[in-house]
Amino acid sequence: MDNSIKNFAGTSVPGGMTKRAQSRRSIALLTATSLGLAGGYTALFAGTTGVFLLPIAQSLEVGRGTAASCMALASLGLAVSSPVAGRLMDRYGYQRIIGISIICFVLALLLMGAGPLTTTALGSKTFLLGLLGVATSPVGYLPILAYAFERRVGLAFGIASIGAGIGAALAPLITGLMIRHYDWQTAYLLLAAIAAFIGYITHAMLRRIPAQEQAVQASTDAKPAASLTGDAPKIAFANPRFWLIGLCVALIAAVGLGSIVHVPALLSDNGVSPEMAAAGAAFSAIGLATGRFLVGLLLDLVAARVLAAAVFLLGGFGVALLGTATHDTPYLQLALGAMLTGMLIGAEGDLVPFFVKRYFGLKNFGAIYGVLISLFCLGTMLGPALYGLAFDRFHSYDMVMLTAGIVCAVCAFGILMIGAYRYPDPHLGARA
Image (cartoon, rainbow, N blue to C red; front, side, top):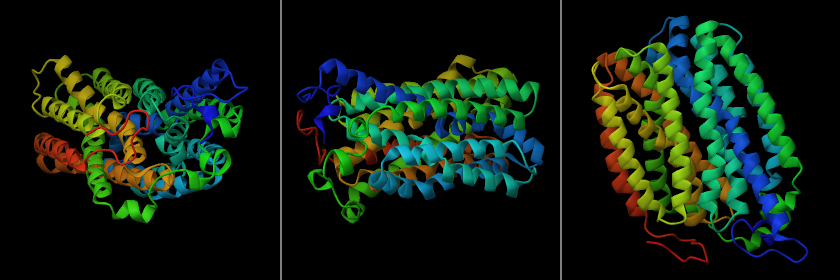
């Protein structure tokens, strides 16, 4: 990999390139990726789904399970397109793929605010949104940093993900305000405008950094692919570690997003005002942002599998706080539960690319990361739908929250079984 991109990570800077200049380029990369995540799929669509759930269900005159299933088809679209996007970025670089995806994402948000109000139409539009907006998610932005940074790569993930957390914290509040004063279709039109504005700025910033210094094209422009170490996709997919990681990722994603999406409804069921229920979604987003930053910071200090197990257990505790809530439960306790469950999704945003880099290498990063993200997306698709169906069946969230807590504990044990890094940081060595 071209050393001109590595000063932030503590590595050498080539002759003629000052440390100050390299530092500016590293900061530019982190700023651009963070801003892109703030105006992309994770913050503006996934982060606001919980606020839209009840208004959409009421408009369509369907149950929460049906509405959540329609919204969850976005995750199916993301799951289908993630491996393809990963391969395309490995081959053509990220600028072109991200630019096209930004345009498609904005158009899809506009479609969400228009057209017929039927479950078929809604499901089709959300599926297209996930399918075509894939590169506005971490699938598009985090591989840039995986290639660009060696040391402190976890910190780079954490800093970049702050944008997604801030966006996901503010978007539900803005969306809730628009829904109360106008309607949910108008709220989606506003989100489309925000996505277009942030997307334009992000893409303009990325275009100003020369490709060889952005490093995502390390496998094509900056350094020959043969010099990158890592498993071929078929070897990675034959490794039991891959599927153990993938299973844990999918299950935790189902618990995390299922809880986040249904937090506003759960709080409403417990007598919380609509304004405070929308704020509950914001607390989930704060947990998401906190999880991403703290996990990113700690990934360079603590073995990823140990850190993941700890996060899964904390998320299980958050699920327990929400699952045992009553009308008399203090709101701060509910907010803490929402934050801890939000941490599950936030932490996985950093853990998944880190797992790929340290257990399967960089040579085919995009292809392998894309498949793991597909499993993550399948979890995020099934989670909200299963939560909604469980509520429709039992008329409460008690049963599904109990199951979710058990899943978190099982996954915490399972992730510890993947062993030490196979491609450790050469400066630090393997960590058990």
